[in-house]
Image (tube, rainbow, N blue to C red; front, side, top):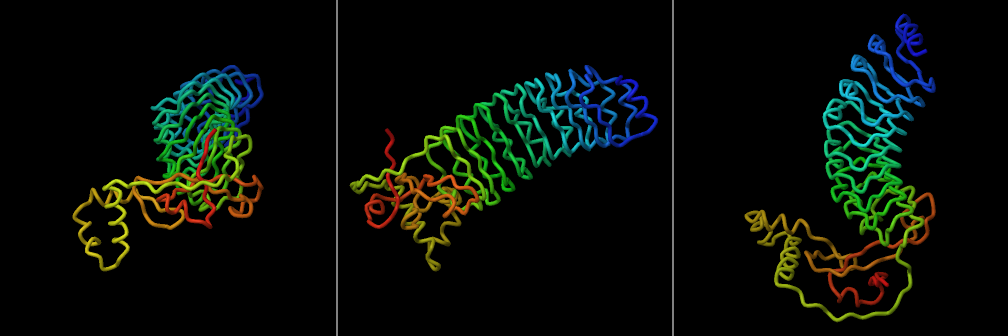
Length: 345
C-alpha cells in the first residue's frame, strides 16, 4: 500500500503528504524521491525506523511521526536542516542523540511526550531556535542546566515525570511564557523564576511544594495552578526573637552597600579597584521589610497573598505562601508587618 501511495505522490510532486493510520511498519526507500515535500504526516502507524533515503527530504518543514514504535530518533532526521516542527510523541525513545540534535538548528517545536526518556542530554542546547518543548509523560528525574541556554524558548512542558527540582539557571529563559511541570516531585522552585518577566502561566499542581519564591509577585502571571501541594498553612502564632550577632564580614558588607547608595561616597570610586568585592556584593539581597541590602545573614519568613487579588491571576488558587527574606530579627520583631516565621512540623 505504501509503495502505491508513494508512486502516485512522486508523479504529483506534492508539498504535503498524509500517511497517518495506514498500518505501516516501514517507509519505502521511494520516499527519498519526494524532495519537494514540506509537510509529512506518519502518525498512528507501527514504524520502527526510517530509511537512509529519508535524509533527502531537505525541504521538509513539518514532520509528525507520533504514535509509532521508534526506540531511537532515526539518524536520517539529522540531515533535515529546514525542519521546524517535529512530533515524536507516543514512541519508545530512550535518549536524544547528540549528533542528530546538531543538525536540527531550525527546529522551533519539539514534542517528545509519552516516551521512555530518563535523561535529557546537555546537547539539547544545540536546538538554538527552539520555542516549544514538551517532555510530558516520560521518566525524567532532572533537566540539564544547558536547557536554560535556549533563550528563544517560550513554552516548557515537563508534566508527569519524576522531577525533584528545576535548574537553578532557569532565569536565563527570559522569553518563557508558560511553564507546565505538574505531577512531579518538585519540592522547591528556584529563585530565578522571579526573573522571568514574561512568564504568564505556571502549573505546579500535584508536586511537593511548600512555599513559592520571593519575587513571584513581580511576575505578570495570568494563571497559577498549585493544587495538591503541601503548601504552608496560614496559622499565625505570636513570636519574638532575640537579636542575632552578625559576622564581621556581614557588618562590613552591609556598611559598604549602604555607602554605595550615597552619591558622593568615596567607596563608590574605590570599589572599582576591587572587582571581586563588587562581584560578591552583586549577590546581595534586599530585606522585604526595611529594603536594606544584606549579604549572607537573613531570616527566612513567609507572607501570604491572594493570588487573584494581589497577583492578578485569572484563575483563583486562593491564598498562597511566598518566601520573604528579612535582614534581622529587629525587622522581624517590629510590629505592623505581615511576615511570619516558618515552622515545619
